[in-house]
Length: 148
Image (cartoon, rainbow, N blue to C red; front, side, top):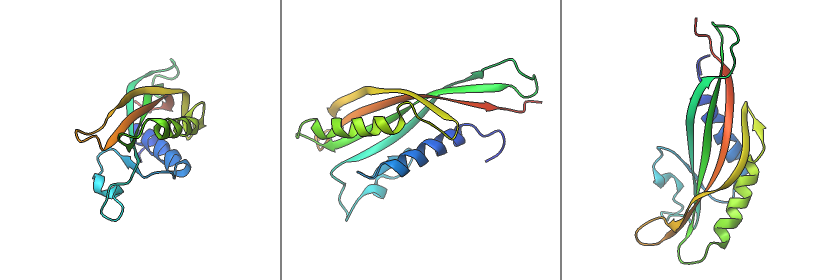
């Protein structure tokens, strides 16, 4: 990407880390057709949806007026979908493992802090085929931009 890339770099780094460290279930990334995770024409028994949200991109130091350092803050939301009506045990095990992939880790300029359950605990579809819980991991990413 170009020298002004920011959101692309963040998303790429997070996706690469998740893909390299999570092989337990298929992963669905934003704006991809869910048919990409079907196995033999059927939806898998469990899968993870990765959502990357960048909240803010503000100057992080005074620095040079032409090349200021900007900090992007955001969160990674990992939606864990497991079979419905079977309890939350598998989802919680997956949540612990997914949290450990990112909690306190630094990679490709992305610096992660804590991880926690940030939502879900509910049916993910009207038929109750999937139960959803969400692991959230906060991060920040610093980048110098040439604004001259």
